[in-house]
Length: 371
Figure 1 (cartoon, rainbow, N blue to C red):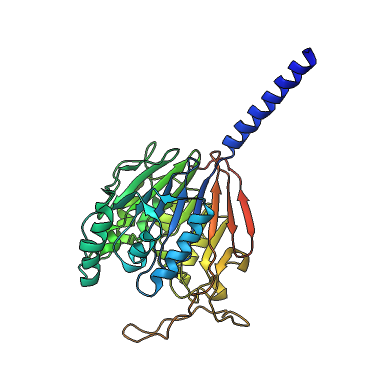
Figure 2: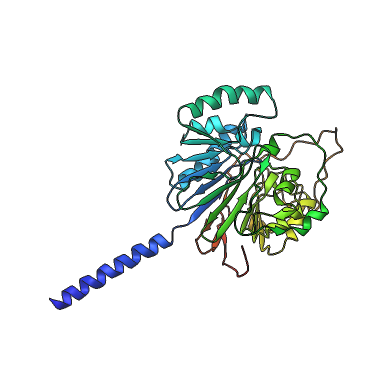
């Protein structure tokens, strides 16, 4: 009898330990989806609650991009999207929304408020199609400092509607010496300036997504003092199109992911700033970019997609765009099978990036002195 009791007690302890270990092993999963130079990034918290940032391209690309997002949704085991953040009203970020909403339930539509860059087609969608979608559920307009309620995550809005966070996320803000190297330009504001930017914390893991926020607004956010601190993962703003030391070098990401296209993002000037960033271990590109060429690209195992018409060799030199006013030849198409990056982060700061094209994974352990 005593032996039976001891055995049962040991069994209970083993089961309890297994359950505790299973709970502790739950991760924040991030799916960076290829939407051909647009944006779509799916976050799935350990609780199962989900946030999708942007919904890809419109027009002929809407069905393609919605299908690629739905592949990530299915792989994540989701039945709905709890929150959808539209960073701003450009077609490569909101164009696929209607198509996506026809395929999956969306519970909360989040944005920065009214459109600031009038466009007849976009305005018609916002006033009719978009309004019809959120009228059936929940619509949230956010401002810097707001929190998106996601169980287990600290999701902070740091930019929205042309405004930026004015108080440090945690602790005192530190002087940002790279600010001295930049002079804001005198250009008209566009929807890019209105981008909803998110800073997401899961335990000791920190990541940032700024949509298409312009350099001028990035400068307001990061200068003269860095109010954000450092991050483990930076999802590059503006598709890796332009970059600034006052952002990337101040954030000191260990990993950068660029959501670029076949000929969108990855210019040498931006890549040089990425590669020279302190603490950087790896850069992952959702696409091989002709603007990078082999000269400024990462090794192939860190690239998720190429394009439909395979070549014997990819160009070494970056593609040079023609002078302003002259038409460039069409960019290579990629409408076939697409692959995404999956990032799985643990509360201790450990995270793994997996390239679903080749199953290559790399794990980044916590380091001292970060964040």
